[in-house]
Amino acid sequence: MSGGRNLAGARPALALGIPEFVMDAREPVPCRVDPDAWFAEGLRQSDAEALCDGCSYLDVCEAFALERPELFGVWGGTTRRERERRRRVGSVVGVGAVAS
Image 1 (spheres, rainbow, N blue to C red):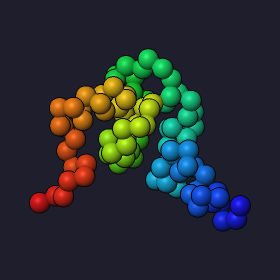
Image 2 (image 1 turned 180 degrees about the horizontal axis):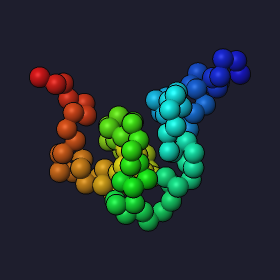
Image 3 (image 1 turned 45 degrees about the vertical axis):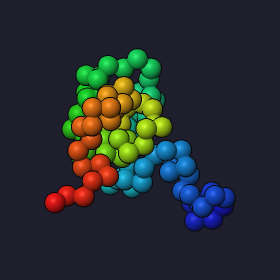
Image 4 (image 1 turned 135 degrees about the horizontal axis):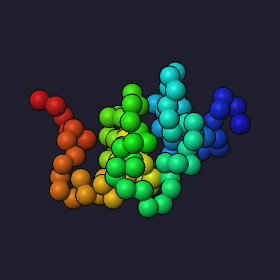
């Protein structure tokens, strides 16, 4: 493996589902410090919001997760259940839409 890529051509972190904006962040990103906390079972929405509080990537991370229903865990201050609810009610503003 050369150049930090695996045989499929993807960067290893991206192959694991970790977006490049997290891996390339220059400032501390809470989910890189203790990633296991973001994948604990049974977290409430308020727990998810607290985990991501103050992260400068909150909005982009939430949009990333809303576009990928296969993701589990906390992303952008939302639980999987909250993201499913938002998709169901159609409150995914800006995701996949063109701003006018």
